[in-house]
Length: 163
Image (cartoon, rainbow, N blue to C red; front, top):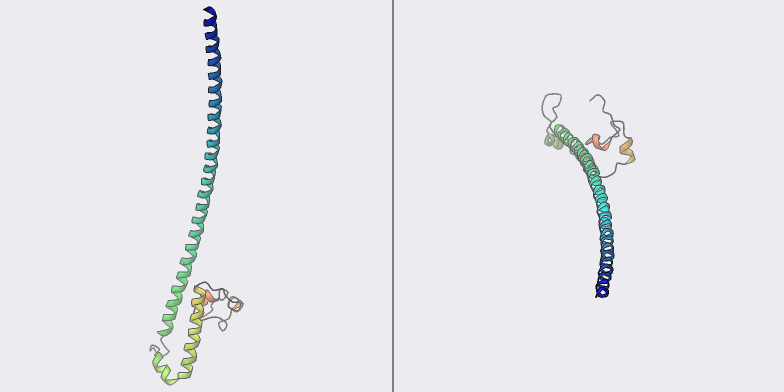
């Protein structure tokens, strides 16, 4: 009977040790899984930080682009006002310019002036829509070399002198 109790005790101790070992292995496996999950979380946090940094950079670029567009819009509006003033210019006698009367008196002159102005205005539109400036436009510094419809955007090196 003591032998049976001893055997039972040995089996219980061996079973307890086996259960303890199994528990330790399970805890180690759980720890390894937790460490792997933690590594994934850390890498995703780093990725999210990179995305946030990129978004901040993109926002700064968008702000810069918006400021450039606002400046271009101001220049274009100034050009439109300048063009309006050309059609409503007052001559030396104090009367407003009458395009129709001029066209009747000098049709060829008006045709050339209107065609030249249209060509210049179309080039202004091309530039406003993103066309690159030609070398001739970039290097224009004299009044005779510029596009008079939009010198501020078509001729960046032109500095107006005494109107």
